[in-house]
Length: 181
Image (cartoon, rainbow, N blue to C red; front, side):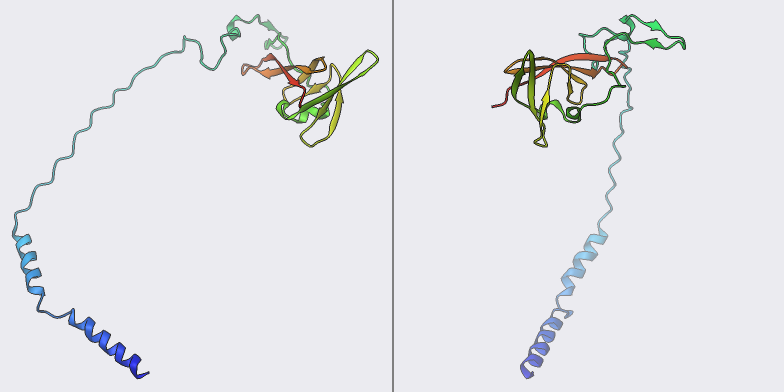
């Protein structure tokens, strides 16, 4: 206990030595010399150039978001319905039919693992991501883009999908599945 008290008193004495007035004189002289210097002016703020806007008018050109392969909306033959709305004459999905089990999965997550032949009928064996085995035939639907099976071979499954074109219409796209190893 006595050594702890001695340590405390000696550290307090060492700290109080740093507060002595002897070494402050040069510091005070430097501060006085800085205060007597003439003040320097502040640099003026740089002037900014006025913003010149540029009119980029490309309304008459082709949109970069529309494929050149499909005709523009103005080039499509339009029919008028009874309430003066244009009728789209291209392919479109049947929204009234009941969805099949494999339409809940993206096409690239399905695996074509084999085929069965029963009489004249060829069936494809598909494994879904949840590891369930499904038997499908030509005319069944699969994938999330209204994909309809158009052909089945022993090595491939051909699918015709309907993709929205962004203008209220649909584009038919060919896709498929190959036999998984």
